[in-house]
Length: 167
Image 1: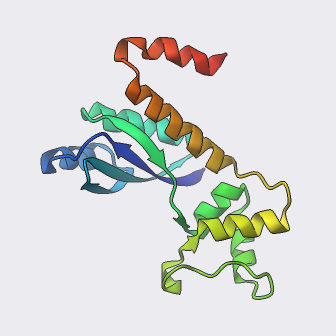
Image 2 (image 1 turned 180 degrees about the vertical axis):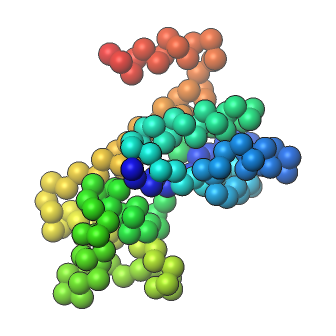
């Protein structure tokens, strides 16, 4: 299993009672932030695939009566998240990050936070491993587009549009 971390965007700012309902019914949501007309639900979930992770949490959030309209992957990532994004074992990524001669990007903020800037990390991997694919980034982009598209589609037409994904 892999721990996937992402943020789901909800279509509006939630009341305190609505936030409480999500926190009670969706244990994978570890924090909720509202503002500027929308709400972000920050998620961490252990599953076998990113698609399963997103689908499971979207269903749970929408079961509380809310509407998910987008997805975002973090720009600051842990070593576990880096491993998931590059498709490598966490210990291998940790060894690369701690090898002083490897030139791995430094943490962003205090070292004890263990957060690395994803743009610098992905550039480091691309330079050393030409052709490196970042499947999770691609899947995140697809998930965001699908969530945005379904938020625009009339509920009566969603099933028709969903067929397009299987063509």
